[in-house]
Length: 110
Length: 115
Image (tube, rainbow over all chains, first blue to last red; front, top):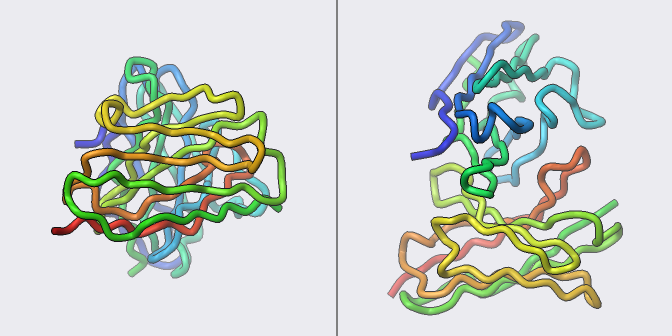
């Protein structure tokens, strides 16, 4: 059971906009930054969003992050087949004094 | 361009100690926390712990009693030891600097625990 809650799956057609939610609590998302990672099959995760809504250099602006209270969302616009991957949210948890991840969301591009 | 090279034993028997090392090449070692993260087959990511260049550590409370993360600043290396492994510790283990704008990950080491 992950500390952060994500839907196990999401899907969309090419060109569509999809969002993936991440729900936490006051000790993690509510008081700390949220990070999002993309993991393609057989590879290490890659940072997509840091500090709630910042994109590292090289990440397309089709990816965006937001946070409200104890929840966060990752939005992907103009969906492409290469976006098919697993997506994870993460945050520092003050109560656990450690990092926590969501269980991951498998995105399928139909 | 920072690169991480990790190595260690890939097959262990129950009750043995997992030992992995991660070397940091091509960039700054100090000023960051270096983490170990694992991923069981078909499952999600689990943070194990982290260490910085001065040896300050944070551990996942669920693993803390079995985990030791250490640093060798002379070699820019961090190491992970996980004692008394069971089949539940079977996973791909990554070293990473994962929450900075320029994240960097090792390729991962598959560790299997089997009698």
